[in-house]
Image (cartoon, rainbow over all chains, first blue to last red; front, side):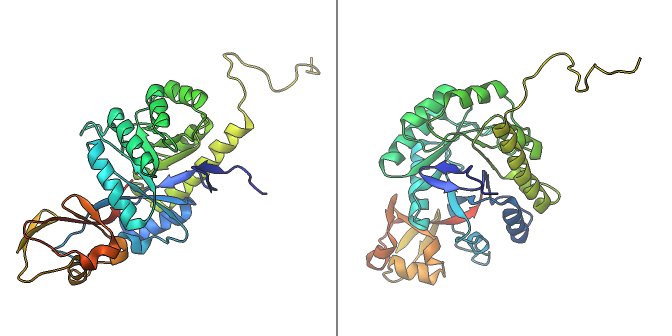
Amino acid sequence: MINPDKLVIAGKEFNSRLMIGTGKYPSHEAMVEAHTRSGAEIVTVAVRRVNISDRSKESLLDYIDLKKYMLLPNTAGCYSAEDAIRTAHLAREALDTPWVKLEVIGDEKTLFPDNEGLVKATRELVKEGFIVLPYFNDDLVAARKLIDAGAAAVMPLAAPIGSGLGIQNFTTMRILREMITEVPIIVDAGVGTASDVAIAMELGMDAVLLNTAIASAKDVGAMAEAMKLGIQAGRLAYLAGRMPRRLYASASSPMDGLIK
Amino acid sequence: MQIILNGEKKEFSEPLSLQKLVEDLQLNQQRVAIELNHLIVKRKDWPEVLLQEGDKLEIVHFVGGG
């Protein structure tokens, strides 16, 4: 079957609606298996100082087939718009990519984003030609400000990063879906298992980005595949259009012809 | 000559270009980016940029992340 249902971000088409991270895997080999079985086309990476004194560690990028995957550098760990912009510049220089998953963190314990800092950094980076995907609090007004600033997609959190709690606020997610049509909505952070991503897709979200839910599973390869299937099932169900919910029963078998 | 490289003090006895430093450190040149005193130095400019006393250098690469 030819699937015309593509994800389009900033004019670029993707077949997979799952984006996955490269952090916290038990080994590079496990990560490679997870990437393969997830079907993802976009993988995220973080920018950090090279360890000058110990050059023995292998490079992460040796384990990512750059012909197969598009790297999406993040600005994780940045607590100000300035630091995030600086990090984006370094990522662009090293990878020659204008794409950036923008994080400006506002609180250490929850890793909740600083939406104000995000808007500022988005505006600046878009002016410089970046394709900016900001990770933000699930808030309609913040989403609109980010889109006004030029964001290529908006990425609301489902729950705190690495918490595995799944979507916490269905109401804001449904409102975001109804009100935001200009750019894709990518649920980022906080999902725990395949049903969480299926639910995100059933709500009409355009894609899901996750890391820990796969990397911290007992069998990362199997969980990666489960996530892929969850995305597919949820997307298909969304496109199929679910039945309306009702409070009382409605018999599936006819009442006519019952034996007396 | 002393510089600060990724937050650590480093001593060099002779003039050094960024290119030479990257080679000496055996870094994969296609996968790192360099910031000198908060300004990015493009790869093509590395051979011409000589390190000066007190320079602050950041050399970054990519690690796992979400």
